[in-house]
Amino acid sequence: MNRMNIKRSIWMGVLAAALLGCGGGGGGGSPAVVNSQPPVTPPVPVAFVSVFGPTIAAPKHLVFSGANLYVAYQSGILVLNSTGSFVTSYSVADAVGIGVQSGLVYHTGNITSGEDTIFELGSLTPKVAYALNNFDGMVFYASNMLFVANSSNVLAYTNFSNPVFITGLGATPMAMAADTLNARIYLTLDDNKIGFLNPTNPSAGLTVLTEVTPAKWGPLQKPNGVVVSSTGFAYVVNQGDPNGTGGYISKINTTTGATETLLSDSVGNWGSLAVGFCGPIGITLDGTQENLYVTNGSCLSSYSGYGNSNKILKIKLP
Image 1: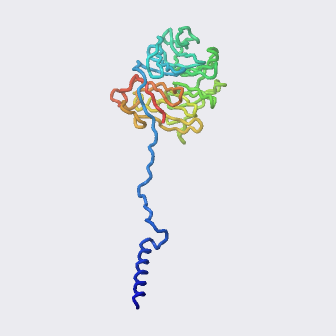
Image 2: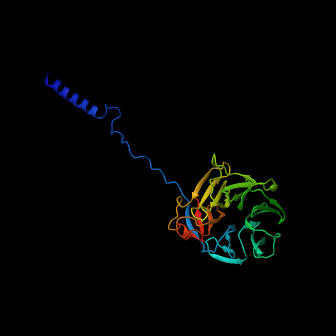
Image 3: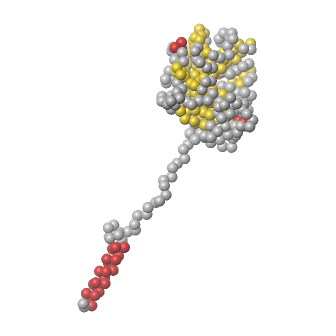
């Protein structure tokens, strides 16, 4: 072989080796880098809890009217502004239920012990007859209908008169909320159920919604306050056990009945607060529909949430 052929053979060998090193020349450049790390899953948003306003002696139900929060408590009605600062208070005995109609605030209370009535805020003139009533939660529907939980029954008033007695509930009624989208009045019961009344035909009685199998509108544990959002969810605050420990908020889809735990002593972000509700009773939404407010009563001093007794907790929805 002459010198020219030897050089050509050497050059061809070098070229072939170079091509093999690049994957046979099928694309050239550096080989693709494979990322062996799994994609990062963003954290699931959770409810965040903070304290709203001062400590209140035995707070009960609460409601917003405009920017102010009205709270029924042991000695009357307390008014707080949007930042939780004190505005004013009204003295009344046995204030428990509270509601708003056409911008006016009404609440339960009594002049004679054991004989509850309804008052317009700032007045002690009874709006309804008060013989032997024992009122709890209340709610208005439309412009002239009022529903009040009353021991073993519910009273449905039209223009504060001619009450229809809704009986056969099977348990003690606790609190109510109006759902104008579905034309319902939701009613919580102390036998761990929730149902609804037809506001246009209250004498038709209670339709129970809670089912065990398949689970719908529950499970609940001593449900107290209930409020309905404009987005189609009912929020129910559960007391928990008889001592007021282990309470939680249930978020319920009003169309399907699907229920999830929004906040409990093991769900949600409690920040630096004591973890857990302490005998929760009332619940409401502010005008933004972004924050829930829950009153807390009493619970065992050994419970993790005891530090939240007699406080209002503000819950930022996720």
